[in-house]
Length: 79
Image (cartoon, rainbow, N blue to C red; front, side, top):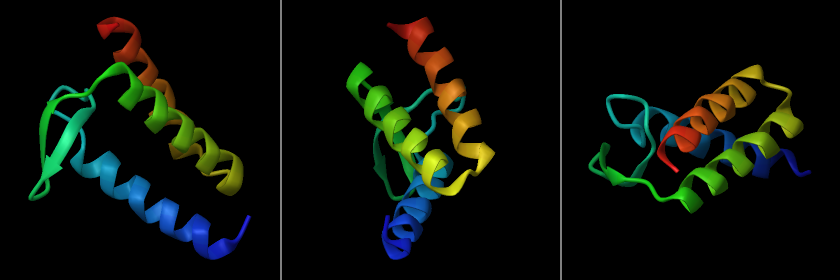
């Protein structure tokens, strides 16, 4: 629980939440030049949600829980 690791993970999550989402909110598999490309696989959703939940537990920032629930809705609909 080193603060510098949490800060790095926080920045990475913000980048992915901003750039790795397709227009309808689905998760993208690849981000190139800040643009989301290709539909994500189920494991992409699982790892992203796991990381967001870890950040929620580490920071208590509600946004991470909300984004996890939103991704879970998309994963449930797709898979």
